Length: 404
Image (cartoon, rainbow, N blue to C red):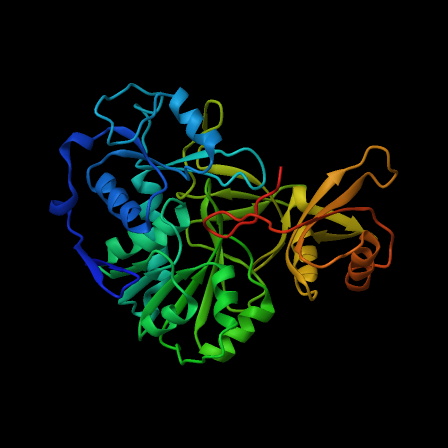
């Protein structure tokens, strides 16, 4: 297999991915971090660590809090000459990922090769019918989703990888031919939908993760490009949990994943993909089980994902997700992005309110936003706090980040 890196001038950097080209005996068993670099450097460094049986911690260096934490734990880059003893030396892991922190403090998930490769084997079986010969990667590799689908899946299946530091949507379309898999995000698929260009991609497959993709954009994509979209639902801690194809309603758990609901209808996951060890101010063992904060409605053939319990609110006895609210607001002319949280309001009999941030150059009042939501959700009164900003920041995989 080859890693093909497309440069902005159209030239190509090509690497033959075999163990002999990447193995470094000095890295065997060593703990170190791989920071934010180019996609090309990240891919090469991760493969080097993986082939060399190192213990690599992957992180976005723009998150200064995590970087400072690693320094206090004596974690240095692999390029550092002096090796320091760390609390992770005796832990069994190949790659460690930090959660984005978009819903709370970042947590580190330690992934063993068994975690990673058992998940890739399940993904391989799922994708077998597409006869994939090329994987195009639009996402960064320092997150689990990018590593699994963009590096380890091609590695275990001897499939060539194509990447570019920044893909423009029309560039991507021109690179796709028969039996291509594109690893993307909802934001990228929405951008492709905006193109006037149409192309028959019926022999290719798009994978989307990191956030839900709304039905309208899925159907638009299917109609314009004739390609399937497989959405993957999971987390850094659990790995992949479930998937659905195109506009299917129910999420279907992956083979080997036991997905059940707690008495509060929150999703509990047990699978070989779950990190045995998590780190958040100390090491925590999971026994391959994680109780998530995702509220679900379970059915015989799968489950509906309502949203994170911390982002669920009730109106007239019916539960709504803040993601639903965000989708409603982002369809309003002039609103580029919306970010919504449920907050407690002790002084109110209702007990909670919606904290809404809008990225827009227009002027909206709280009453206007209330009327839009009441028209789409409920006529009942509810409290909101409205903030208007020029930009809602996003991380490297397109997740909207809360403004402190």
